[in-house]
Image 1 (cartoon, one colour):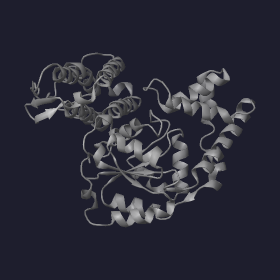
Image 2 (cartoon, rainbow, N blue to C red):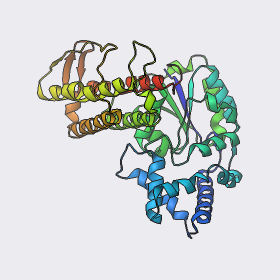
Image 3 (cartoon, rainbow, N blue to C red):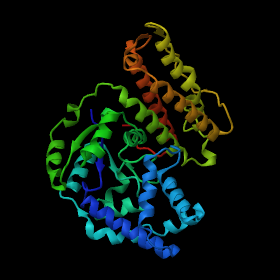
Image 4 (cartoon, rainbow, N blue to C red):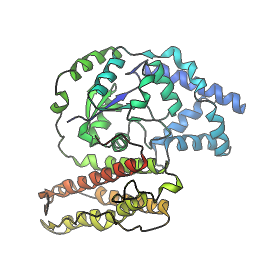
Length: 389
């Protein structure tokens, strides 16, 4: 069942030829940076910086941090200095790109229909642009008055992966608080949008031209259309991007935590943020890795579920950011474990005290679901999420 619609902004909700719009932005970016620094030929800096998102990098760093650090290195300048200079680019210089964009037919009616049906609606934009740009472009698309109603706006300041990376879509759904097969991505590029999203397990709707939104609008006006989308078969290729995307979503939320919030509880029977982190770090090795290793080592083992943890989960540290780093390192070791699996290993059988007959693939997928459960819990604690869908 569909609970959220992820609407691609670039060339879908905002009617614009993507290559012309990107070129107009790069010109505005170069003109701004040249004016701020006095350097010539700044047009290649932004392109080189965004390419760093596709390479080997610290996945805890937000895209904006990667881009800013890359530009600073190219200019041999302090990161803080470049961050300040780029800050004045947003949003005024984006006005230069307006001639390349406009409101897409049926976009507003589609958003209204989805929101009226109680769905979460997220705006999916290329996460190389800052939120100020996304907000401005939504205004050009005639959607500015919906900004407070959107469940999430992807930007360079809240995402950790490039748009063509499947982990980008895993991070999106974790931030919204849904499972992959509960999301419908509306995108315009089969290779760069739909294939990565489908790798994670999302449903997709291809819009090859902005005028084609009318067909989708008609589709979502059929009674019960959300129920026509059923769960996707599990595939081992879903796991790596979900494990990484969940990690990105967690650290994205943690970047918004104020010091006074680490030990606060929304309710006496709920966990604090520190308790959530302690639980994630503890169970990654003691439960999730141990369970997978047992299935690999023992023929058809019995897996006993642990009793549900109560409200008194111990606080394992007074340094929550160190606990988050500990969880990250343990998660990277889990990724190393599954990277070594042979295709037949994923189907190794097991018996679970709650789920019954199962296999390694299902148990690994349960780990990803466990992540999202506690990411949503953390999000609710911060008051950064909509009510549970």
